[in-house]
Image 1 (cartoon, rainbow, N blue to C red):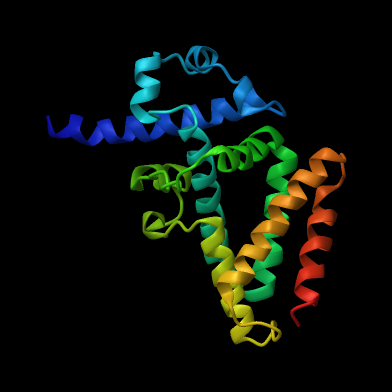
Image 2 (cartoon, rainbow, N blue to C red; image 1 turned 60 degrees about the vertical axis):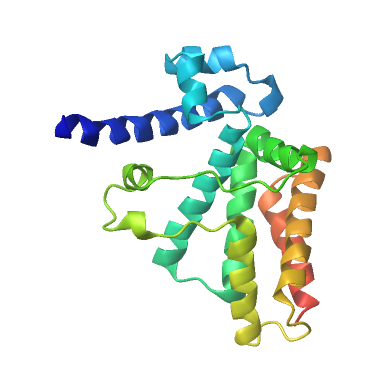
Length: 213
């Protein structure tokens, strides 16, 4: 009985990550709305009841995708030690890479935020999922997951403290500006088929940062 209670959370963690990866594989550059639950269940070989047990709404997979994305960034940031403006540019690079790799999910996530009328609560990521993603990193389950806004606000605060930003000290307003630039860059790159998007991201972020120095 004790062994079963230990195995069950591991199975649940693995299944959630498999569902996420299968979603990424099925969508490609299509929109999330084009993903049929029946196709996803068939690929993972589970029932709809099982899927909705872990993701009560189909859109929850989008929230989980972004939560896992920010967890990856948190692990990378702990290892790299990037801070301030360097951290902001690092995030811009990672966002552009994710957009090029998974355009359908990235655009669908922004669309979901635009269409929802309530503040989205962070989708839970459990310790077993963290360990499963990074089995070779000791105590990886202790790494805190922050939202994209929280990560940017931290970097902006560091940039102000280090005098990399001197024109403003209102981190909340600066965070909103940075988020606006990021989401706008993604949509513009998509609409106008701008490639490579990394250069476009970098240029737009640096224009903002140069105006704050």
